[in-house]
Amino acid sequence: GTPWEQVGIDKKIPYLQKINDKVFAEDKRIIKSNIWFTNETRYILVANSDGVIAFDYQPMGQISVSCNAEQNGKREQNYFDLSGRQGIEFFTPAAIDRLAKEAVRRTIELFDAVKPEAGEMPVVLAAGSSGILLHEAIGHGMEADFNRKGTSIFADKINKKVAENFVSIVDDGTNPNIRGSINIDDEGNPTEKTFLVENGILKSYLHDRISAKFYNVKPTGSGRRQSFRYPVLPRMRNTYMLPGPHTKDEIIGSVKKGILAESFTNGQVFIGAGDFTFYVKSGYLIEDGKLTKPIKDINIIGNGPKVLADVTMVGNDMEMAEGGWTCGKDGQGVPVSMGLPTVKVSKITVGGVNS
Image 1 (cartoon, helix red, strand yellow):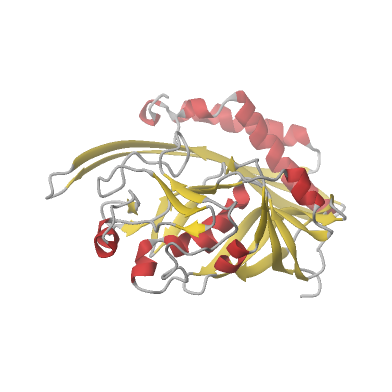
Image 2 (cartoon, rainbow, N blue to C red):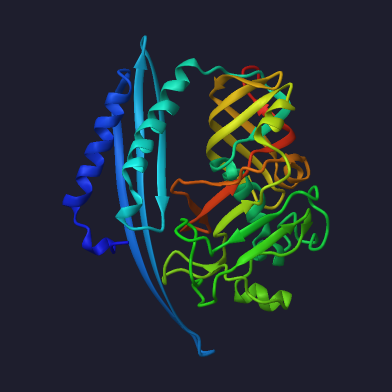
């Protein structure tokens, strides 16, 4: 694509204008929209005393759309965004259309949303951006520094069974144009597709040079840092679960009473124990195998390794999250992505009406 340096602000404004017009045309209950266009380009040169000299060019574009709507004196707000390692060509007319429509749909749906009852129940994670749960509750525990220090729950689990045999999880820096992709890491190691869990068995951690030396393995191309001002740490790139043997319809059909979680905000994870809480921003009630009403204002509370062990169905519909996720660790932010097929977790605690 066109390098971002050649794209002036005059070229970007019409994109924002177009989305804004579409948002207000989509539904008369919309009272406000905020739209952000962000882009950056990183040119990285890494040289070290082992004779490594490596270069990477890393473009990034992102558009985020937030909507406020009002109906009978009640207000709701939601958002949708698209991001990737791309030039301005990434934002096609279809993408522009989707940004507006999806932001409005997610916002308007909240007017009809209900709070489910609290309690332990099956939770279906929707394909795509609910992969944030995989990233936060499981992925961080697979970063080698936490294991080297013995603080991760996965510290003694290499070659042990951690999930059903149809569960495989990779962390992949090689996906073209995806937000977390890199050609080299910030130590000059080539990126790769690292199998963390293969057919239910924990196979590898994510390594930088220090941890690779400690474990006597090759680096996995996971040594990343926010910029040259920060130290390198083992970090995720694009973390996703591979497709499994089930269909989305089968998975939803198998749930008598539970929820489908579509998108999350404000997660909190304690890496050591793997305990997490997540706020579900949009999702649906599942009753007798069918999606019934939208849900809102609930959180899910669980434990990463336990959730992994409780995955009982994995769909064949793997999707990458499309949003602009930035992962924070030790005060450093790096761009990441994640993905998931439709996945059924047999039980997670849901905090709703009577929690």
